[in-house]
Amino acid sequence: MAKLSRRQFLSETSSAIATAPFISTSATRARAQESRKLGFAICGLGRLSEGQIAPALTRTRHCRLAGLVTGTPAKAEAYMAKYGVPAGSVYSYDTMHRMADDPEIDVVYVVTPNALHAEHTIRAAAAGKHVFCEKPLEVSVERCQQMIDACRNAGRMLGTAYRCQYDPHHLECIRLVREQVFGAPFIIEAGFSIDVGDPDQWRLRRDLAGGGALMDVGIYALQATRYLTGEEPTVVSALETKSDPAKFAEVDESMIWTTQFPGGVVAHCSTSYKAGGIQNMRVNAERGWFELDPAFFYDGNHGRRSDGKEIRFPEIDLFAAEMDDFALCILEDRRSRVSGEEGLRDVRIMQAIYESVRIGAAVTLA
Image (tube, rainbow, N blue to C red; front, side, top):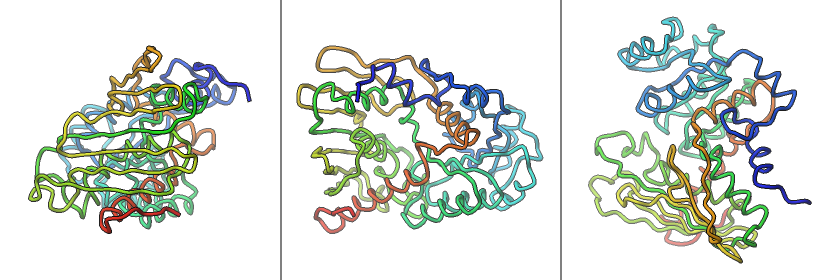
């Protein structure tokens, strides 16, 4: 098979991203672009929705903000005033079933705490709506499967909000691995940490978050190792540490884990709610290396290669890109690259990571 140029790879891999400079111009896409914009209802009006998702919807080509789901009327009032959402398309979590009679809403973007994703996804699917859900998809494999089944039974699509899969910098790293520009990869290093801040927030409650740093930001590193290798890990071994047992009594504070892949790649990953400055992704190969640092931010990601070249592309709105792609998947009746099944795979691996910590030994993945 002939190798693709960098531009060819980025064009083919991210053809659904309307804001990127490497867009496909197929007849199918041209017809889709003439279609009406799909109406998105945001379910959960927290900081991510306010700061990233709602503004991104104003920059999409195939989506529009058409509805709200919240338990806080004051927040709904602010969104209605700012974005012109009609009062008739504002719902509480208990009245989501009424969306079945709202033709303006096509997709529900679930942005509630992790352990509520299944509940809100199932309600949206029962109302006949497609669902795009923040990561992690849920807190257990069983709940993920319930979400997948609910959307499948309703004939609706389920997607997982993995924005890094739309970042040109990550797509370039995938290309470098696939084409073995530096030879076969051997060791991948990836990690992401944040200072979680407020000790009273839902992220530190197991009943709402399902886990701590791993579930929240470690999942970015885990995802990266999977889409870089194009494989699923076979063995995982993990350790957890806590410097503040009181604050992190219910969830993990800092974790490191190692995974082995069928092709021989070993990945070393880390995450933390306390240790600042972990934000990188690096591939060490036969004849060199390449890395992104920072790798997982909303913007500003960039990197370098061992041959001295930079990995740097024009910035795009990753939230707009992922929503536009999901809308096009619906309009073109094609499977999303970030399907519910993709979200489930990461949750299965994270459960194995937690099990490895619990038993103090490596866990083999089926």
